[in-house]
Amino acid sequence: MIMVRAIVRPEKADAVMAALMADGFPSVTRMNVSGRGKQRGIKIGDVTYDEIPKELLLMVIKDSDKEFVIKKIMDVARTGKGSFGDGKIFVSPVEEVYTVSSGLKEAADDKAPAGPAVEETP
Figure 1 (tube, one colour):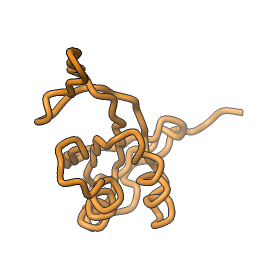
Figure 2: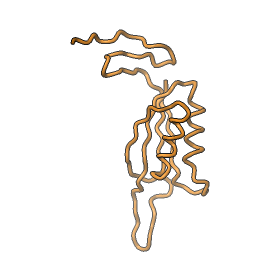
Figure 3: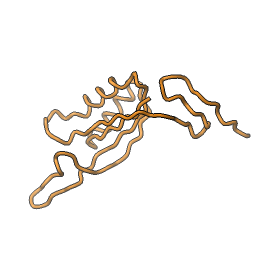
Figure 4: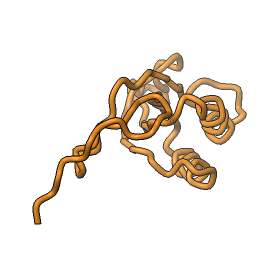
């Protein structure tokens, strides 16, 4: 499994999440973040804004879905203006996954769950 971290413009976040949901990827964690990339902020008059609001979308997906998900995010998040600020996508391997409610340790390699669930008491 892999973790995809996508930093996108706030006005594009809803569309990206809707597109992912429509294509069968409903599990996304969304956070408001701020920062700057190559654009180094923006200057309006005499004021420079060093930190630009963005949205961080986090998802863990199967390795086999990586290309599809990345392409979907890029297609939806791109403004088409050819300027900086549309975002970045970072991909990292996921070694282990645990489900808090069941205590289940899941395999992190496209396979079925690997460990026993913790027994619940009534």
